[in-house]
Image (tube, rainbow, N blue to C red; front, side, top):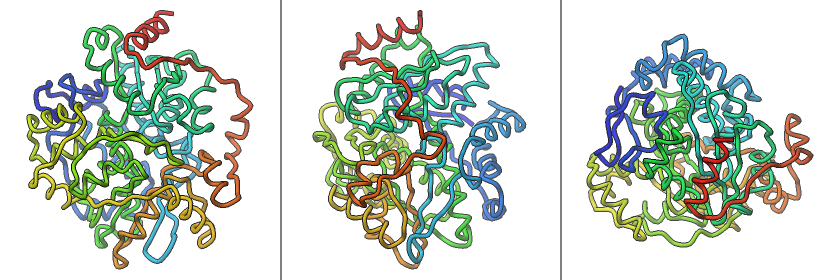
Length: 462
């Protein structure tokens, strides 16, 4: 299995190289050269299997010779042993033919745990074998950072630095990043919004002297390993509802497009997905683009669903790459235009996108109303991101096809928004009950590339 860049000029890599590299040296994102497919019989055989067994079947074709079968099975087992539900990603019914896929039973109560716990184990195994060490720098709108710190804390071969927008994450998200005491993890509260954090991250990757000097690696959703891990729960959910004999649809609340792109990969692998619905909050650049209005950046408006407060959706580049028939030059030109404010999508490419994805948005008021309604009609407490997905799914779904909405975080991660909607303040699970009693440890940083590079070098050296 070989991996190529969406911009067409970076070296072709193996899975291990792509995983440890993250962002391609031409600024693009790595994708598989070809997408392996599973037969209907292989998919049907997943019925009744454990999450770990399905994960092995789905991911094994992508990893090449990076790990033996035995090594990879052990990595998967370690990745998911700390989850709080035996099914890992259980389904809950909301209404006739409408289901909620609970992705918040991991260590940090968010869907990012599915990918990050796996990535942590794969990094440790690959680096330990080489006797190598890397520096991971990530940017987060809330959940990626806490999941990364949880996955890599205390590991021998990794230093981790997470940039998050100061004052723009929930208190629970912040404390999950700032309370771990291990010396190899560092929470950096940066001035600006998530797009600023993401831009500085990409700047560091594009500074090859710095990148090579600190052996920089990335675990944001730009990392193919992250996307691959998320493909698995599309299969477990769909098979639970009768796939491959029965078609299903998915609605995905998304900001950076990685989670729904994983659904596209599942579809390409042979899973019978009818619709992939993109759900956005008031920062609705993806909804506007998929409705033919072009991809043009505006201001980022703070919302009660902060993990979706994004205007530059990195993984959308992967979708564009396939929509433009894998023309790296065309994608590179669009990304140059995006640096200047935005771009329009050609008619042919837009038709390709709209054949796969549909979209919708939820305002702040609609999100709050959905949280309240779901509590009253189903007893379910939704986090605001999951509520965005449910609201859009109800509008978009075909009643004859099962719709699965991804519940991306536990409501206790966003207690203020949930309490405002329902009057109920959701408690943290027992294993996190003392989160607000733990000592915080973080560093305030300005939105300045040189200052960030100097800080990272200094902490590695110490």
